[in-house]
Image (cartoon, rainbow, N blue to C red; front, side, top):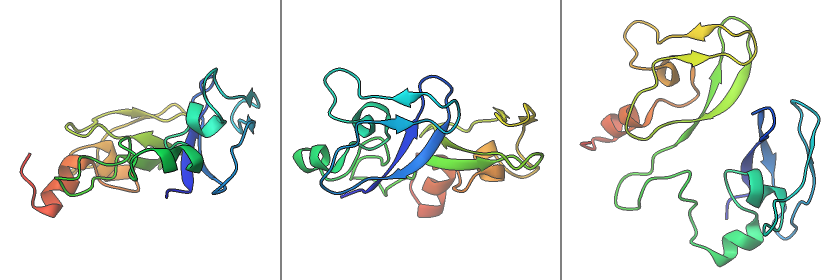
Length: 146
């Protein structure tokens, strides 16, 4: 069971990694970016189910064991599809989803507004400034043809 989730604020786009309790749903979350108090959307039991990358543990227990948003199908090696991009100019770090089949060439820093481009020899901004290389590079490292 996954006990960490990335909550993304729908108002300002701020993303934060949050720990989940294994048996309790969280009904409020105060965004650290804009200060808005997030509440679950109608039909969802908690803020993780509404705004998180992974639903809460009680919902996970009812679903398949692996969240589809974080990994490719089980027939392929598991790809990490989230990366923390850190701006070399201001140090701002943001959790960003990575497309599974293409490289992202530009990224506009939410901290200082600078447009980041890949370093020479890198295919994309995730490979240059991310905590995890892009999925095509992960696949190449794992020896999987795309």
